[in-house]
Amino acid sequence: MRVFLQRVTAHKIDRLSAFITESFRFLLRKQTLVERILIDPTTFAITLYDETGQAIAKQRLSEGEKQIFAISVLWGLARASARPLPAVIDTPMARLDAAHRQHLVERYFPNASHQVIIFSTDTEVDRQYYQALQPSIARAYHLNYDDETKRTVGEEGYFWKE
Amino acid sequence: MILEQLTVRNFCLFRGEQVFDLTPGRRNGRHLPITLFGGINGGGKTTLLDAIRLALYGGRARCSKRSNLAYDDFLRQSIHHGVNGSEAAGVSLSFRNAADGEEHLYDVCRSWKVSEGRLREDLRVLQDGLPDQWLSENWPQLVEDLFPLDISQLFFFDAEKIRVLAEDESSSKALGAAIKSLA
Image (cartoon, rainbow over all chains, first blue to last red):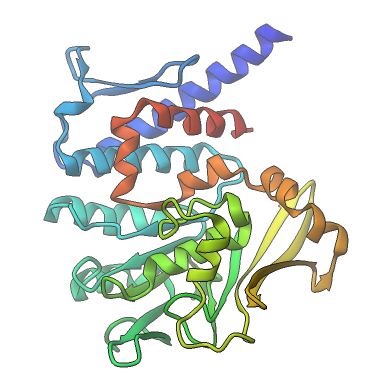
């Protein structure tokens, strides 16, 4: 029984590693940075490997790349899960460059889960990205903060009406 | 699991009761997964994320705005400024969950107010629209079965802070819990 459990877990971990690797390569701008991602079956530590099989220290990733890596781990989990949970994502793109932003908007947000709730400023999901996301948006709200009354009122529609 | 509706009442920046529909949609046969909230910095985006966490987990919720505050103090401070003492603040979350071939709609309604200097919190849980005393009393254990706190943090997240996954080995604990839950 124990061996069986270990095998099931090993299988799950292999599958999860494959999903995370695929997600990371799909979202990352540098296509050849990472060849493979492995998860240790006992400690669950995640290691990145380049094409030559060398481990890549995570400290060498830029702040933006670390964020893309973390999102890839979460996306991999959602994809590997039989009953995924909704993805609720706050301030998604503040530190990312244009290529990574575009990848998140076009590749990740519409596919992050069966339900995706995004909290964004107008400089993250801007007009151009709003257009790109539009085919996947069920509804949008604008949290309209009034400085005078110090209140926020939620209104239907995003920052601007199309 | 599908989140259907979030209601906030006199919660932080939100005065009175405001309801947000979160249900995914469908247009021309195409699934529309996204609900998009736009707001300036300080406009209430993280407040709504906190409201979802707070509704589900109460004192165990890791709310961004709580930092080191005791739970009671956090609830007191999150009552919208300018409401009079007799008005309650609250957060409610409705979600649908399927388990063992059965789907149910849950409404988790958490409210609190200060009366005679004391904070009172009330939790009511409805299943398929009917108040359920047993669910209400046992909610902390039930939510942990449905939707463990450690795992929720991998799905409800601040995309910037989540970078710690790449930096911090202790976050592998949450990851381990999530891997075990993949059935």
